[in-house]
Image: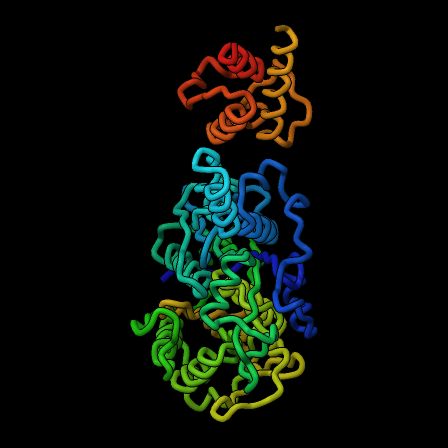
Length: 398
Length: 81
């Protein structure tokens, strides 16, 4: 099987614009949550896009395009180093162009069907992010969107990894994006009792009461290892493994015993050819909802056995809230950089243990990763979505 | 009537600036390709012109002979007459 390496990363998150900003600020314990939400407050689309590009794209596409631009530059792709037919793009999203959808519903209701914009569909469609990135960078290979709620970013990276492994492409630009801080999305998640009423994201803490909505995007450049080395690319890490499973259980609730998630973790480790004892760090899905954090803890215990009791496991959602379909990609980027620097960033706000939630959630502040034998650090990154979609990536430092 | 034509022309130019926001000053000689206007933009342009001038344009109205800003202005002026 062909090996897939990470050669570039980009991110726009509530911690700021740029993947290094995400990594450094999370590791320093900074939070992007303000007033019960986590917007990308520093993101000004017109600072990165032409007026026409900004007008032609929903915010979720704008975030994806800027994250992709950073990743491609980071990879050293000033000019595309491959035959464009051999490079594709997969960008996940949970919802797509929610703000456009709501705006146009309002136009329909107040002004009538004749006033609905011809740009409505091309802006709101869930594949708009992938389309914009492929157009901007001239990628002629396979490109599409992935929709699996809060697992979409991880599924996208998994699908892109498979595309390279099986020879459909030599390189892929992949990640996830979400911009759903809109009145309907807020009301809908609140109506489900999914979001925190206190406005505090504190995954795995006994007082957790739901997730805090965030927005953002992250994109990785993946390349086939030999091709990357041949062009002298700087390699940041390796996508060692991937697996996806389904709970086939409930539209929103995970299986209480975490068995669907556990099967994904076990299968991903099998795909990577590594054992539970090889896992140096777990980047948790860790939403701060009562159900997820309990079932995920059980899943990690089931899949990692004794290693679960000692491995550091932290949730980026403690710092940036839940970015839904972007989360898996933002977490993958954060994990690649954490592994490179051998650091376990903290789960912010964790103070009170709950019975049964007894893993090492890295409370307080970041901690150096203990990696034996001088080998590259290895992590799993968990993502679980409404609908019972479970996706797990196994990432390794270069 | 001349004033009316001038007003229509200005309305058309304003609408084109709206759909080509990276170009503040448009001249009749500029090609639609040059100002990066495509079929989606023309659909939006048609909506603006219908609202402001009551002129209904269809996609098929923008035939291959309509290639410049001046062509678009003339098309709308002729339709508004």
